[in-house]
Amino acid sequence: MAKSQFVDFKAVKAAITMEQVLDHYGILDKFKRGTDSLSGPCPIHGGSNPTQFRVSISKNIWNCFSECKHGGNVLDFIAKMEDVSIHAAALKAIEWFNLDPQAMSAEGDKDETDEPEAKAPAAVSPKLAAKKPAQPVETGAPNAPLKFRLDKLEREHPYLIQERGLTLETIIDFGLGFCSKGMMADRIAIPIHNVKGEVVAYAGRFPGEPAEDTPKYKLPQGFRKSQELFNIDRAIREPADKPWVIVEGFFDAIKLHQNSYRKVVALMGSTMSAAQEELIRQHSNSQSQVIVMLDENEAGQAGRDDIACRLSKHCFVRVHMFDKPDMEPEHLSAEDVQQLLGGVQ
Ligand SMILES: [Zn+2]
Image (spheres, helix red, strand yellow):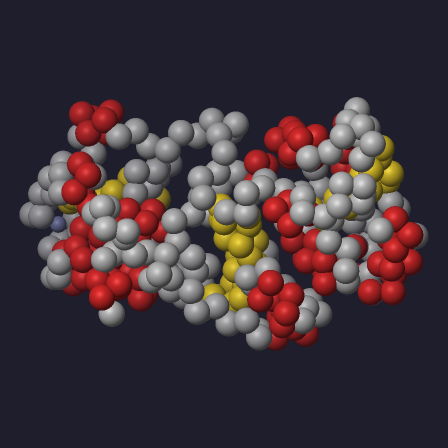
């Protein structure tokens, strides 16, 4: 109990967006979307003017230009809506968005007071914006480790067990699970780790075939998947003389891992970014071997030659081609994996 009293406000603020909070209140559809803004009637004073309440998406702050005459961050908003303290607002956010309270607890020295915009009446004024610029967007910047973990994920979800054929052990090992609410609501959350093993994002997989307008995967805004190789934190712990296997998707990597081939990384697509190439280069040498095993479809066939060509500057590369169209590494049985890769282990 005592521990949950100390909430890391910064972590809670970083974990949720104004959009999610408006959605939580069921009023997101009343808001008009601009390039970096949402505008609508003010839910705090209950106004009807459709432009007086504005949200800056990149800064994750809001302002009411009418009666409230002020603004703030997500927690200020919840505090106003619920008429509670910032502390109570943070606890509500943890509850609503399934955040892990342990990961949200402050170590003692952190609180909201070092955040100038927390209480600023005019949070979007240029002066304050200049003081605390929005997150840099240059593509070379690494993804920052998350300060929170999704909590209460449903591990034994039929999509993971029946559709994807994963064992509970694999599901727990990879931290997968169905998320019932919050940023990845109604999706399977897949933690993505950087090379140090820190979680840098959750990908959200729709559990099944989504409708045409619904994306299969949802990634957090601002997250650059081109900077990461899924599963690299585990793959680098495998023996140096064992070949790398490069696949496209999360489930290709997870399934190969389950079938005992663990030096596998996923590109999260069918192309290799410069940053991903650099990651492989850093963790290999001229004696290393790489097997490029993309899906046997148009995208995979187009991607693999480019990848093989670029990696061959650093190590020995072999392209694996499946003899069946549309075959994917995920579909390989344990026996197939043993047959294909057993000799190289
Ligand atoms: Zn207002």
